[in-house]
Length: 395
Image 1 (tube, rainbow, N blue to C red):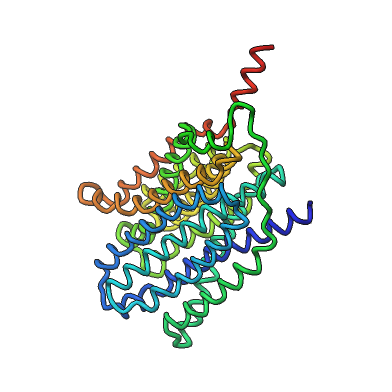
Image 2 (cartoon, helix red, strand yellow):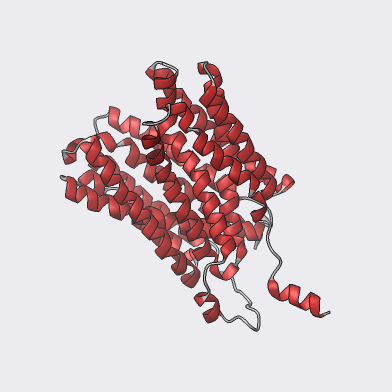
């Protein structure tokens, strides 16, 4: 059993890394894909909404499927879909085919995101200790590998279609090879007054929606860092282009390192403390970056912001997955779905705010989100099952 658990954990690492690599390769080749399709930045911005819509739809669809058929079945199929879909943008010749390609890629990404997180919860349940954050670090590492591989193939003159075609084949191989190591579906023992059929018809609990709302706020903060950190140093502090790029680099590096360390912190301090203090540190870091008149302090602020956020989302997904073993897929899909909307909304909200406030002051919005998350961190405490409470009262 221990050997199966270890193999399942390695397979989960493989799928998280693959997901990060696939999406990273798409991002690296955006300029070439944009040129081939004959579109501008404005049109691409609208088409990216299709990528987000597809991801959200995939997340909501795959949650019930994961609960019904098990992550062992759904994860490899989702990984295969995402791998096959990544080549489609490279083949797109116009705005319509690129839009369709991004929609399919979004669906594949959303399906893989939720199903592999549901399996990660299953792994965590087997280990009886926090392991979720390390999986999310593997996703980040996959993105770094994609940047390196993409830079190499671009230097060799490979076309986006050729590179993404090779990536798709490699992804299909990884999806197939890692599949046998995934854990089999857990056998559950529902209580006498709750059959699987009735549990399926139950509404999503209010606690799950609260976790999802916190995920939206935290991932809104991540989205702001992804799209506005470099522009902040460039426009507000008048940094050079090379120096400004270090802002996102500092954020992403600190987040990756933080995720590698967050599981140990969670095991020692508990998920509530990780979210509460992590969000508080993130708020302080972004406040320092936003108000600093010096470039070095701003870079430190962005790094602290990434370190603080690093362990927050994994705690929310883990809590959702552990809340109900029979509905782990659906619950994870709710939290991941709203979180993804937050990731998309962050950059979109900041843009209009810059018409009424300086760019650095608009960062007070994500700071407020971090403060709210810190105040509501207690929602991560697992409630006692209702039947157990009733039995205790009866005694």
